[in-house]
Length: 87
Image (cartoon, rainbow, N blue to C red; front, side, top):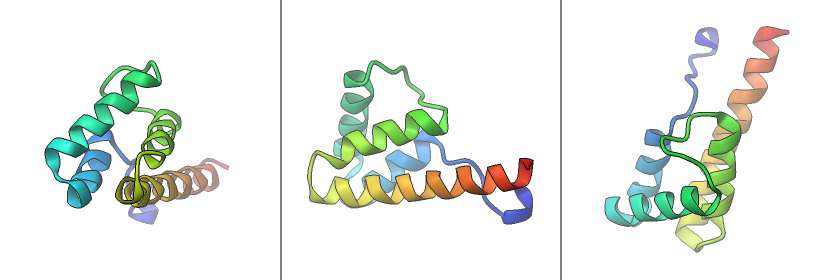
């Protein structure tokens, strides 16, 4: 993936993106509740689980929908690029 200049999205990246829109405390709270309600453990590390949390947070409200969709698009792009690199 280094050839494309993309690193795997992380939980930290996701929370920062949410914090930019809703503030750090709200972002941390939303993320934590989403992780808990999905039965996952923190830190969320796999792209598939990050996508699940992003989709869950998208259901909360307008601003979180924007951040969640952005993360989801980033994850889909990362996964697609990773498949082309390993193929």
